[in-house]
Image (tube, rainbow, N blue to C red):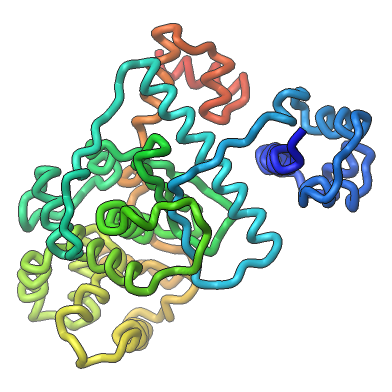
Length: 376
């Protein structure tokens, strides 16, 4: 029995059932110290302890002791030192992503619906040129906004996982082709605006294209140069320079704040993405970050909100009273569909059972029956 796999599996099932260590201790009759040692791989439990844990979690022995998958080409970066709890959350995120990707690849094989990666031949290391080539390869007109980035990314042969994970110190990560990708995992927390998630997809796409050598499965600190290149790629991919300048000039007759809001709406991006693009065009006139501070100050004077707590402002025509809740784009502009389509197809072709479909979609049996009814 591998202690690493046991600890990871226990942690995963705790997360699925939203159980804390004290709650699992109460259900299993074990001490919190015993459970902590198991989760941290410090002790090898006897069969009696394993029976109590598996019973409390409602899983079988094989599930509890199963080998947990790893991703050899995961690209995961952070710019801060992690606490022990954050390391556990990060590890859980890797397990969730690996299981999802393994299921995705299996569904493609079962249904014969494998999608080819369309951007693999882009070799330039220049972020702007790579973004331009990507748009051309995906059939996006030179100055056209991207209205549905989820469908666009999936049509490019990239697997997309919109996952509300507990690790709040990252917006997204990506996996290379060796592990069944390319794939992009996005933090789909309700606390993060849709606009921020859109930028995250474009940012991770930049890493997939520009930084192929950095997908080594290691957890390291952020590379400032690579992060800036991915940001530059994302800005050019979402808002080509010529299109941005055209829109900026078209709104030259209104206030600076309102022009940013109108352009944000046109391209379907966050106000920070608009400011990032603007800052790249005006050069050294403002120090990095000062443009954001100036915008927040003027926005507060005009609309009464300081833009803190991940607040995403509405456009002028939709301006509402100040609120601490992000004013996002419609959730329908950010919904992943291909994975469930593959599950449905595999189920209807009798390649997988209803219980397997429920497991893959992380649904209860009752919810899965309701989903099948919806399909029909």
